Figure 1: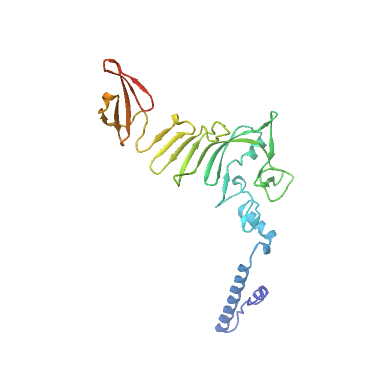
Figure 2: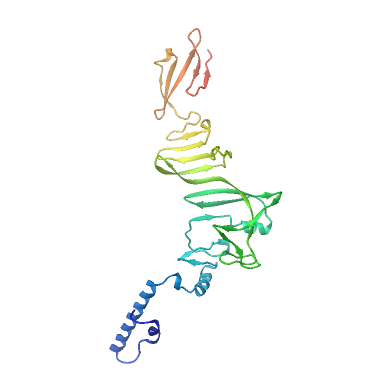
Length: 294
């Protein structure tokens, strides 16, 4: 390093002498300043930061207490208790109202979102009862426990322990819906999942509804029930909305004929005749029978 910080402090360029002398002194001073800045920035790290000076500055800038560790803000940030201009996080929960609900004695259901791992969960929580009494716990997340900063209970922190822990009700959670990615034919596609399911431990997805957009179709189905599924592709099979494009009666005398509809889909029907050779019943591929009366 060309010189120390003390030299910078005491070596201010002189304002006397010729223009050439003053310019040379200013040039030397700028070179020394640049070299010191390079040295400081290259050697700056958490081990030589003054936290007692840094934390008050962050409190004023963010209006929330934070702890800097390896340049990562590790304290929870609650929008109701601080101003956030721009923030990137790896997960987000909107159940911060738990704290105020406890203070207000509100034991009603709580609906909220949980965003993590490329998915959005829609949750519904009900207060857990222990012998008929609402169960409580201290608000915590990932091993960090929260405390009110003072008795007014208007600001909370997880970087220091105070006499006022943030107490909340315990909630039993149900995931009522999910928006996520799933892999179909080696391609990730967006999927909407509806409902909490039947609670079957052997198949947690049983009874959940799915809406999935594939490359060339839109699939809507109820998991675990083939009879309640609806497939929506280029054409929509709802109450026979496709129009018939062809009928083939070449095998009619042998008891069957085929129907072709929009999109080239073909359905084979069985025909049952009476003793006079008249058709009295037509059966489709699913076994549904239509009676024919002459």
